[in-house]
Image 1 (cartoon, rainbow, N blue to C red):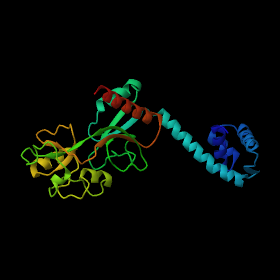
Image 2: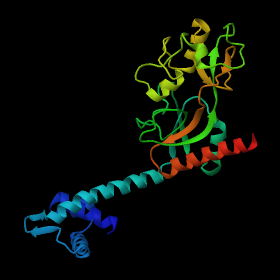
Image 3: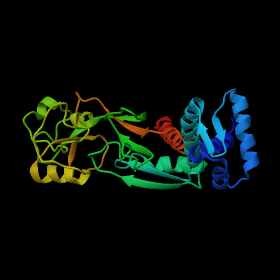
Image 4: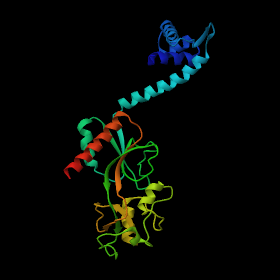
Length: 278
């Protein structure tokens, strides 16, 4: 079965009239009738009951109409994705974006990249709501329904004000921070994500949404929070935590269309090259 023949059949099945279907398809009626007849021959079944008043669908015709429309819709989606020259990338802070951009442009210089930077309340950067095609982000978070690949694992530490009694320790554990106020994420934030950055247990303290809000919460309120090691937070101190698992830098996506897969492979290549030269 060719897609063109299926389109012919769907037009006739929906119009229930060869003449109207021919006008809709901008073809003459004889080749349309022959195409449907050949389709019935190929399938060895009658799809339409013909009469001077028009046509009606047989049971087999009803089944084929449902399946044909689904197949044609899928084919149209593939065609659109293959023709797409724009990719929307969600980012949670800058996780080596320059390296990834260089690796992707090397093979796809003509593709326009649109960036959507999000706050700390959505680790998927709008991936679940269809606002982005792929997300360069950080875990852990709920990966249900998503495809993910870990690019790097980063140890984490406690963010403290310079005059904090614990700020000059070489290492800490989450037990050392018991009873302290932590900056925390709003209700409705991904539970796996929120639980990790709260050190694995409920916390009290000011609610924040962005990185700068976290910094200001520590500076002004003496709150405690977590951050990956190696981040420059100006005058704040970051002390490594020995009892926290690392936070992975992750690339996440939903659809395996060619452009998205190319971006995933470029990101993987960029991070692998960085690891090899480290």
